[in-house]
Amino acid sequence: MLIRQASNAQNLELQTFGDAKYHPVIFLHGGPGYNSVIFEQTTAEELSRNGFFVISYDRRGEGRNEDLEANFTFEQTFRDLNGIYSDFNLEKATLVGHSFGGIVATFYAEEFPEKIESIVLASVPISMQNTFRTIIESSKKIYQDKEDKVNLSYIAQLEQMDTLAYGYAAYSFMHAMSNGFYSPSQPNSRAKELYQKMKSDSLVLKYASKNSYLAPMKFWENEAYTSIDLKENLKILNQEGIEMHGIYGKDDGLYSEEQVNTMRKILGDDKVKYLDNCSHSVFVDRQQEFIDVLIGLKK
Image (tube, rainbow, N blue to C red; front, side):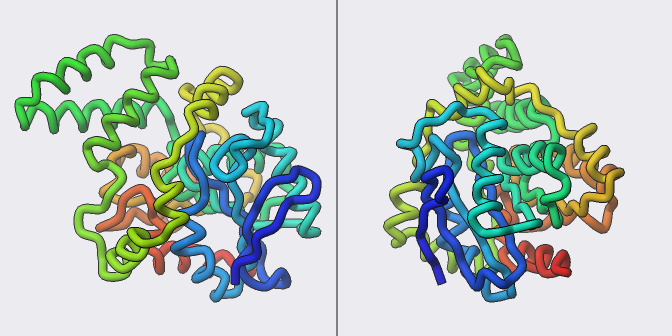
């Protein structure tokens, strides 16, 4: 069951699924500049049927909350999250951070460890710089194999840019998108069903390709997000006893196996899933395995 409502303190539009007495899960979407629509329209309700109270929202200044005034800082993002905790009288919750949302979850847990039941890091960049290098190297190989001189020239220009610059990140992600790095090579039957369903879902059609240009630029200006590396942050959280699990797809062109292995070394082999026939949207590509991770965390 979906309930659309506003967070009292923040005027954020948010969506809830399931009974409020169940285990609370807050979904944090990717980006910056994206939204939670695909998660909500494919997986949130299914997750709630497994005994979870799911809260999902778009960050201030992004997606369906794009019109709200935003500073595009982690500090403001944390205030909004704390407001959601307050509105629903949550003492603790499981945070599901997808992609950039996993960075938000990690930094929030550092600031407010007492509010964390557990964290699921879904397709999260451990190192932004490593992610950009992976995209560029993989794209370059594709263009070399195709003898695509035009795109090889673009890659050559990209390789000469300041790797911390906003443009370096933006162009890298453009190559990832054009080369299909976000799509599974051989989706299973459930994923095929969900992708087919999305083709006729008006909300997905409206928001699936809608990216805010202001949010990533401002997060870059305010938080230097292109330089973020989570290794030490995750090590500290793990040492402090924060329960964390990672889930990645082998078809996700944003991350090398090296990044996934780094996550395994930090969290432990048994706490990181690296799935076949799965790309960036792990909650679509391998929905049941994604839900199983959360079921395993329920106390």
